[in-house]
Image: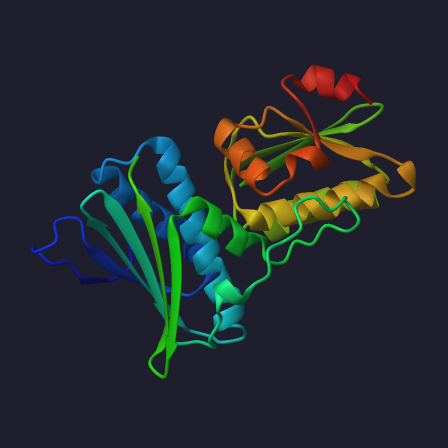
Length: 148
Length: 111
């Protein structure tokens, strides 16, 4: 794991890590989310979904928000709030609003099928809520999912 | 991620192992393109040892299916898709774009 940014004693399951905003670190981001979700009592099946949603979110930030930017960082916080997991990702790249991404047409045939927007679509389907805030300080994506 | 290819008379059986995400999907896509470059368009993709696949992998699958099906020269079929990956493919509406098999022999025999 890269540098531990903060881990408070007040929130037992809360942890924040700063990851280099590069695809090679997606593995570690998924491991980090899995660790918090597992301590929060999520099933292995649900953990896979959380990892996939976090991966899609981080991939979008690296690909779009930080497009062409070297040495950028991605700040990831993962926290259990009761029976709910809260995954947030902060970046200082271009603003990118996943809620503005059109839903892909999943009924289109092979030649018409568009791949753009699929990551965002999966995030929305896999999580209960996906929120996005953008300010001069950067972008903040927050996703939550309740344990079944 | 690891990829290995076995050439049969009528098709290639390509095994993909490990994790396919935005970091590894370009190599996955390249392996499928390489088969096409060698004139192989009937591809059975064995996923039994695949642990993870994100939409970056789905994108490579879609590109490969388009290229293989062009001019009716072949197609990509999926073999032994692990449950969690199948669920994600279903969510993405991808399962109707690919025939699936539970057995590599049946998949190879289908061509």
